[in-house]
Length: 403
Image (cartoon, rainbow, N blue to C red; front, side, top):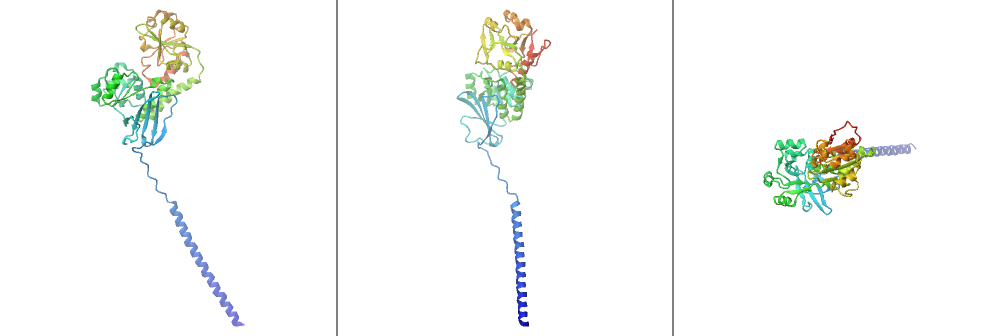
């Protein structure tokens, strides 16, 4: 009996030892597994290598297009790597295309056919347009212009006059007869012209290897569309931020005036040449639209409907339509430049019977009116101020009263 008890006790002790060893083995295995799991977690948390930045040199991959509020006759598309494609609409089916290539980048093989290649920094260009020059100057890129077709006495923009005086800008003669030798000597290969460019001048420039783009801002149906062309020049010269500021400042005038009440005042806008020929602004001209935004009414709203620019009129026909206008805005720079009411009436005696003359409300545009396109919003605000001013006011920034 005693022997059987001892055998049973021995068996129990043996089994207990085996179970203990097995438990230690499992704990060791679990610990090892935990270490391996922790090691795997640490490896996963290490940052992965950043993908190599894609090289867009020589590639045209569209990124976005420029947003425009009023302008319809140009567009700018932005591509990866800093490339830009700007288009200017000449006719419904014809465009001037400029491929703007960032500094240090190559020209893409898939560049648009017949595109003008402009390698940045774009400089040493010819500009034959005072409004274009005003916009380029406003965005801070005047130094990019080397040649102009207007002499120093033609300018009312101080920065341009100073550039001509300091020989940083060269006058090359009238736009109809530019000095081609000076263009060649300067090494200029790109030019902006107004739509007054003649075919013979363009052909000669092309022969000399000068690419020409016509500024079509005068075709814009909204006055601020002309100012918005600053964004095109901002893109060409990498001055987008400055161009946005130029446009937004002028647009703010318009937004504020559109919220104001209409004045109910009527205005006639015209000039008379040295030969006695009268030209009135057409009903859909941008100046008539400036007047409407300013809160006025155009006295010749049935003249040249659907047309921009001016309409030639007989004095008597003009008088019949405009005699009761509350105000006159006389286009001073084109109409003999009168400095007094007497000088104005010398243009035509019939004008003395107009209501605006009798009331002393004859205002003239300042000499720089058609030169500083970057300030059209401020000009519209001046018209509003004219319509709401008291009798003591006789001069505004862009308008002055004849006495």
